[in-house]
Amino acid sequence: MRAVSSNSYSENILLVLEKEDKGKLHSLFETSINLKFGERLINISCNNTVMPPFGIQVPEYCIKKITADMENREEIIFDSTEKSLLFKDMDLKLNLRGKVYDSRILPVQADKKNAEKNIKEILDYFLGNNEKNGFGIGSREFVKVITDVENSTLNEEVLVKINNIRKDIEAGKTEIKSYNYFLGRGEGLTPGGDDFIIGIMAAMNFFNHKKTGKLKKELMQDIYKKTTDISAEYLYYGVISCFSLNITEFCKKLLLNNINKEEEKKALYKSYENLIKNGHTSGVDTLMGILLYIITALKTV
Image (cartoon, rainbow, N blue to C red):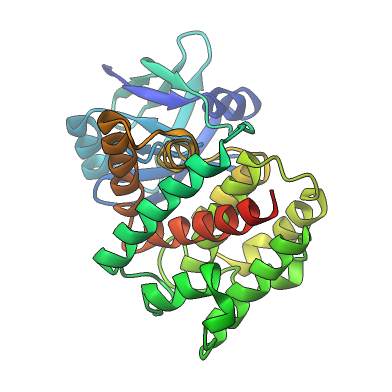
């Protein structure tokens, strides 16, 4: 049996495999696959930027072999002794090796003035690039709602709904009715509305928002009837404060980096690019959720 080793994997992977050691193919793409073990998904890809909370990263040649040879009937077995995934029909053993990364977001204490300076820098960059989003709204219209709503026309339904969440954040509320509009809204493997919610949830965790228990429970109620399996998996992990590393890295740098230092300014921009390049518009939709929450929350601090 040919053996290959991963470059890295989320610490959540072993938690899944310890409960369920037999899996099957869930979905297959050109450069990644999703396996299903029990109720949970495991993503295998060669993307070392996104690094999801249920991900394993492997060399490019490895994912090419897997996606080329994988069949629907393939059963995957977890060997706990060797910490390996066995693809028996493919005669392949994937050893879980390399960096084990922590997907959790823990609260941070940010300097308000510094964070506001970073946000202004990113907003200017965001507007200058006019990034395409999954809602079909202009960047300027969105930024107007989250920074200067009194002078916003709110002439589209989605802008009204975004403003409803902004008002909830401002009031310290987390009402599911404000989020229901976005759940499952949009196209693709992860609809834009879900990515938007993920961004909000990530920012909530950084600010240690206390009143999220009820909202998280309600978000997951009948979730598989409301959105795609893959999007539901990201939301499942978001509920337990776990997010893709490109999201956590951007949030940290947005809140903590000192852009007066050239190296830290470059790192902030790099984390921005790593976020928005995810998917067709997934990264931008996530960014919009992050900006909405952080900008609004900082006004209440």
